[in-house]
Image (cartoon, rainbow, N blue to C red; front, top):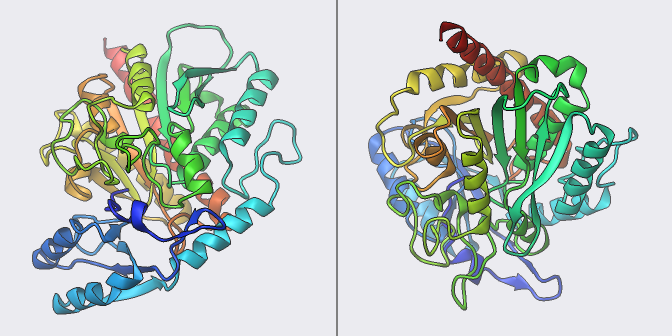
Length: 426
């Protein structure tokens, strides 16, 4: 999600003993914008690097959350009060929450459940455990599963893609393409991607209809360097890890794609969390995803990128408030997912274009998938936080992953139905 951490990432105090960025005393505020004047005030605040806006929707009444350092809290509260924006403090000490999360995540068994080949959803899995799980699936279900590397990260971690089929050997089927974790700190996104993989592979019998005429290709962790850094050094690290200057590392991968690159809601400041890169596709991770998209030309019908947080199903465009020609088709498909989730769990998802529902953002994978890779139905799914901290508590991981799966399954069924009718008409 959107944030302004240009200075926080480099200047936030660090515990030298633990070598882990501290957010001691940072508070998370929640409020809503009820009119255009309040919305404008908040958009101006979002330009201040001292404030980390976890969410900033453009629709009045939707919750907004902001992380604020101790030194900036009084001024922030006064600004809200002057603008008659009522707020609540949903987390009095974000640093304490981070420390509790970190300790709990290191206490529990990481990879296996009792069943061979399974993965646990009681923790946020690390890169090595994710890799081991994918490799075990490829061995156990070798007729239906293939794991490949689509490239290496800057720190030479393989970027794994898992291809899931029904094992019938038919080549060149239509494809559903997914990725997760392009923003390192959004841990629930890779967890949800792993849950989708588990459902398609380990629970194949219940979901075989999703694989009859479609292969699924999933990259569960597209930014492993940043993800590992967010586990070991800075919980709120968002970017990749390739050095940019002597002082600043990393690029926002979701601002690095070569479609309206560097135009809006990005930063040219190398330390900024929304830094768009020294050039379009400057990062090996975004290059790998680009090449994967183009390798599926004509076959990929649906592209889904998992993010957090918020309850949103988003489609292009991000760079403009205008809508793509086929927006009604994409909107209809997205609403099938939102309806399924609402019916099953009661959770409301907001559906719409990125720039109209949340905020403008150029250079993202979503816009690139439609405009350049010609994937007709691209979507971003922003997953809920289900708590007061940035990502869901460990006890909520599986619950939210299951909820996400309900939506993804409904969307996939709608996609399959749509393109079956298209093929029949042709």
